[in-house]
Length: 248
Image (cartoon, rainbow, N blue to C red; front, side, top):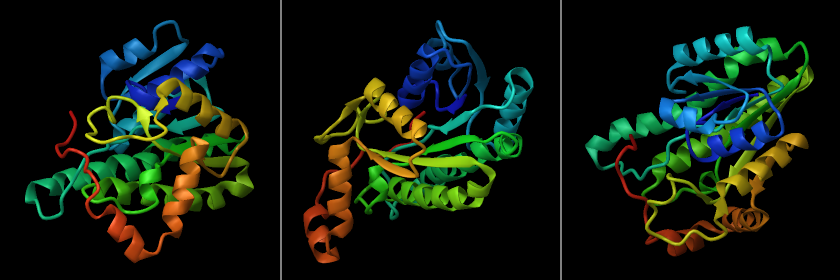
């Protein structure tokens, strides 16, 4: 298996979940110490790489293919979640960083593995978000990036269907990670990272095309999608907003 975003949060939890099952892991992330902490006791190779950097991801993938062989599962779990405002000129760079990580990061993660995996099949799993169902005030970059990620993964699924490579899109609700602990608002149905990892693994094992986790949030997502625009606007115009400022 090859997992991005493995230095913390859901990526680290996924590494521990599959590592406990005896999987041979390739773990990619931006923070070496975090990767080392995740890899304790696991059969893991570590790759210091930012998913926004296509060349770095290509090098990491080539190293993993050379050292461990073709993976059965590739999980793109890296991402950035931060508040943004279009009116703030300084947020232009933040918009780019979020889009690069959450959308192009999927492309950079999957592209090097598609050719080798085509010979024997496998699963590519991308982590989207319920935040991509409707646009959230103060979260325009994140909501837009996750909506784009969901549609990208759908396109990729169709492209690879005939090659026996399954593409699984998982849209979690709130997960208890450093990314969400800064949120100044209630987070219903928040899951522990280990719980979320087990649910993602369940979706991968069953090759679900698209799934929202947990099931309660799936109902919330369906309701949000069906709300008429005037109703949605009235309910969410003054919703609390995620803090701005690009995470380090």
